[in-house]
Length: 468
Image (cartoon, rainbow, N blue to C red; front, side, top):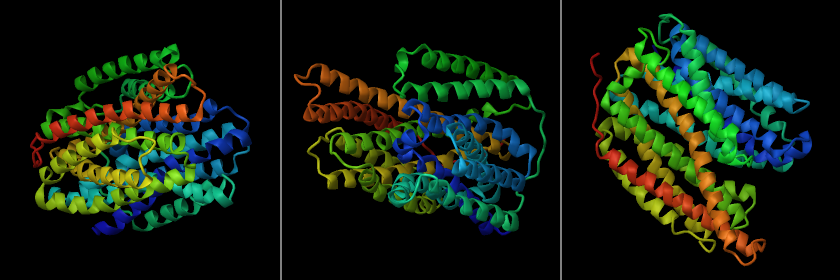
């Protein structure tokens, strides 16, 4: 079986579905005016997307055992293409939201198929390079989203954000229907309805609660926010207990009995929160303290994000040759240094300094994420592949939602404390200094996460496929 056409088929589809996660965000101010809705209502276009992906990924562990690779991939891409078309022609907000949720469903089904196919196609000693190619897509696509949409919106209406993606989605469907082969045989395990219900309430509740906390609706003082997270947490606990008791669980949590997989999971959660801290905080700092436009902010962050994507295949090949420790430990140590420098920035810090720091941070993250993830998954026996990929993808989505909400709340708290002690809290200079103070507090916590990641990296060992 030729692996390259299969890999290309998956990467084309994944690139445009993941690109879409960040493509629309920059158009929010324009959409508020055109659709006549409030910013908190419009936020559902982002929150709803994360929510659907967070809910669907756990169920994907079951779906990839019920359907063939072709059925899963083509189904996901058709859902995504229909959602993209609906978004492009949406006459009002409710249609746009429905289209976004269909797009999210396609993305949520796509990610586990991508990972699971790599695990089946490539032997452990060659997985690093293949996973590095996926890393290029996963990091590169969302990175260029804001800059690309800024360019499109300079001369075209927001609907073109969808109309320009649609031909590529259709091309992906045609290309995959010609070249994509089935790499696994469906085993059709028993469907446990209660597991699906509990995972939906659990993961959905946590993602929704944390996403809502940053929407300016009272945050954690709002009973809807902490109540939703509490309900989600209880459902997740019941889900865990049920999975450990079932013979054919929806998401087999026994994958955590493999130590390197467990260590990788914790490391990736920390890395996702650190990544989201800077991806979320830097635009606030650039626009609120340095006075840059949205487009200029996107351009300033573009080189680091591009480099992160381009380096991922290289780190994958180095992983195959030297193992995880040679990449993850230096990468983690480098990240600690960079995050310390981020705690020292101010409104007087030059744009070139920010550019260099962001590039260095993204390079260090590319040295950690895909090598660690590949190493953790390599330890799993084949029957755990769908479950391992579903666990990692789900927890990364949840960590992303928690990271955004947590770091925005830390930043907002720091801003408030600064302005309360200020003589003139409405003065532009004071507002800029308050933004710097808030971002500084968040970066200090990000630095703490980076130190924790370095400690965990020291315990990492090269894995071999374990026997069940």
